[in-house]
Length: 256
Image (cartoon, rainbow, N blue to C red; front, side, top):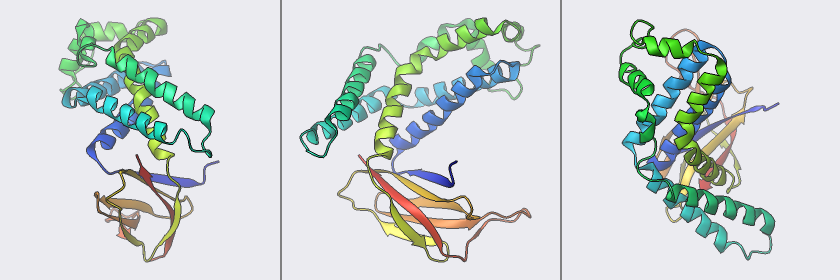
């Protein structure tokens, strides 16, 4: 059983978008396996959120740059005697294979989903609160009442353009999260501030604390300085307050 809570804080916009997409992809997979109408509605809503992010960002080029950068880092350490060469080769093969698939993708990712008249109708009505009721979209209501195999086939088809991107984001975030070791720190009176080495390519902060500690981590900062405040949640509708206690936690400054 996991006895800790981990809070993550991205240090640039690119990683922020990647983590948001990671969460949305996980939610989509969860609702995809559910067999109720509510599950399928939720899956559609998550897929619409994913598409919105892709419309606002040139993610294909950003991800290809990240994959290329990580491949260069791995190649640099390939001759280090302490490196597991078999594991390293597997990682490089995964990065290269994913890059090839993305390079082979034509056009902006996700735009072909809108070729479906049904999905296009759902997308247009989704901006209205409750706008996809049965009287608004009888075709959607009909689709929701089809057998599970039919609904699952359509959802997998609509989400297929994002499959390679999801693999790439998982690879990148997994690499970043596991490339650095944590340090044990103490936040005196619930407050901790530290400087980041600007010569290092920091991407992400991870703060972990024991679940028995009645606090949550509130993180702020940027490329140079970061602040962590451990806040005690309030149960009487008041604002959370900074803990007066010394809070032990582990800090990981993730590179690359």
